[in-house]
Length: 288
Image 1 (spheres, rainbow, N blue to C red):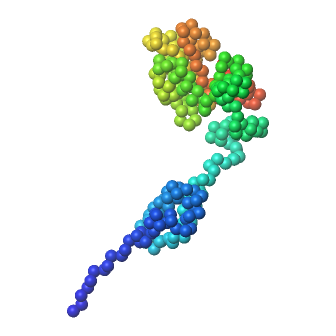
Image 2: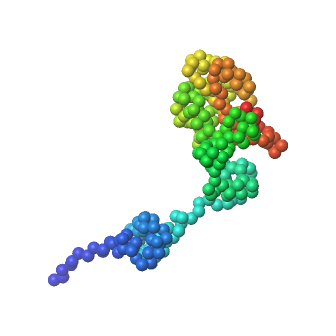
Image 3: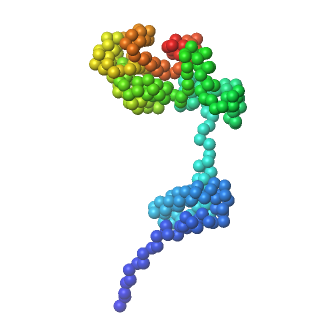
């Protein structure tokens, strides 16, 4: 008589992988721990072991050696400290490209940045020895170049509009033409920026035509409005049957009704770019 016994279940190959602690304490891993730190080493070991388990689930014969696992750990640690910014060649045809860092710094600016990268009188008055404001280094330059009464620098135009509306509107309604409710690069939308400033957006006019009487009707319905926002559409254009108040007429209207006019120029050019083929870019000086 022949007796058949059931086949013994094969052991799970993933159980042959070393434990996280054992791999971290391996003599080969000690230099990695000294260089990258215990926490970073542990994270890398766990990630490598997780990937190994996934491979073994698909192919039980693909069990890695301890040496191979530690090589993968070292590669992951090295990749984690690698620089993420690299010089590139701008062959896009767009001179001031947002995705490529906008305008390259001239050598003089690079040298000045390197000089100020150490200890500097950023917020120290060297005459009195007391604390000062970092804006004092930039404010005189902005006022001299643009004719403005004051100036400060933020990260981008969306940030400038957000801070401007938060400071000037203080939650009151902000009036904007529908033809200027644009979305710029990076997903910044004018309605979202207004909302994030804590203000309520009041749309006037139509996509292609807005008149001063539209602003008058909006103000009659919302007498608590404090700001009119005028947005330069940047590289967005509507042609044909269009109309919009000029900056001058809108400024006169705002001031006559006790409102503040905030203009988002988009690019913020400080020199006339017409000689370089960019005739439609307004300058800060012209806006003021």
